Length: 635
Image (cartoon, rainbow, N blue to C red):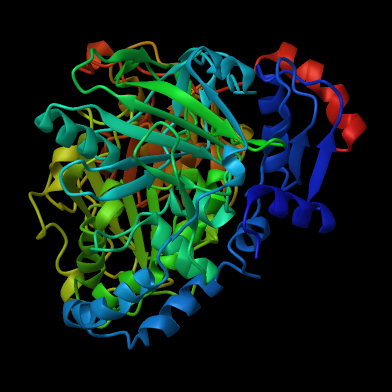
């Protein structure tokens, strides 16, 4: 077992999964440029031993493959997570809510390995207090060109509710704003924000500790969507994964316990009565910049560390990134609890292009009409799954992690206008396209083989002749051109057209590039210059005979490569509020109904009030500087 970061780094080096970088490298953009190309290529973790401006080495990409993520948890394969939990609970899938209730006592066994308190700890071998506190001595990364400054990107933020005593360890980015001040990115749905509200009601500061490094399983646990079961928190989950309790030591300036085997700990407080500070921009896990906003300030009263401390970091940005494997670990772990509540679930996956909450692929065992919607809506009621934007459901024998294949299967069994549902609900606060901050709509597509009751007569499921998102929301089989929705959802009733490049597709003055990948999609790109431009281009495409063999037309921004399926779907999912941006059109020329999706940036002329962020890209100058180093390192 890897009880701390340095032991795990040694393990990775023995496995040939770590490269030491001895040449001087800047923490401003350069480390990001190298780490980004390595994680996207499935390459090794990196240990930068000569970071400019700091005496501490920096480790990055530690969790950057599925295999390394499994090793970090003491496993050979991530699928073992579900197996272990199923064995613990002796799960007999099929009990629904009753089955879940009967297993709650077993779930509490997760808390049977409580943390172990120690008096001395490696993380307190070096202690800086008062004027000695200087965050500038740490190799904190400035990740992307538009970032507002350096950000701590892999922190385990420890807080305790001053009223209930509830302890939480979460991962929230922290912008360094001075030698002893950072921002604290506590979003409205996060437990840390709830603890701060509790402290405000009691009229006191909230003590906070931030651990960097330590047991790799604890770092994972800080990202996991742990259910609100009394006695279960990130320490107990780590204890369960490890088979032993986490060692904790009391902080030197805060009344909090911190991981004894961490590399570095920042201690301090957040004052709920203090004015919030401007934080950001930040190149976020969405692949877009999060714009400036107001967040609480964290004041550092002490920094403790090992004598030979290694600073751990990660970067987020355009997928795939390292966080995709942390997400996959949670996906594997929480499959079993999901099956207890929704026993028809066979498997599910959140593809990297969906950045965790924008896309969920679900395979079910179907037994009755409407079951796909029952499962989709049920998932939206499970913890952080409430942030899901698009849920695809099928009962076909297709792996949910086959991203293009899963879409093809769903589109083959889903008639636009008949086989989808729009819902409203909470949306991740980082979603830049939602109709309002943290509130928007969701799309469930039923890609199952249909029962007779689900087919019905054309036009009977809603007001015929309605176009646009309103009709789609009503579930209408929309037929403005007089055509009829397909009479059957059986597999094989519809086949996608062949792959077509731009030379075999119709020209349009506002279309810059386009491609049909041959799986039911038609991607078109445009430079947005006027209101409703994306919608109009999509409608034009839907009425062209080239839409035959297409089920989903997406109009994307000019920076998207329509030949890159992952890039196109990532852009599509980020840039829509489904109720507003998805319509169904049947032009009546034999192509059948199609979903038309306006995934262009939204502008003020369309009634969109918020600023639209840029996609994250590295500067050519930095790419050029790091190309030579990457070549020398074989990266």
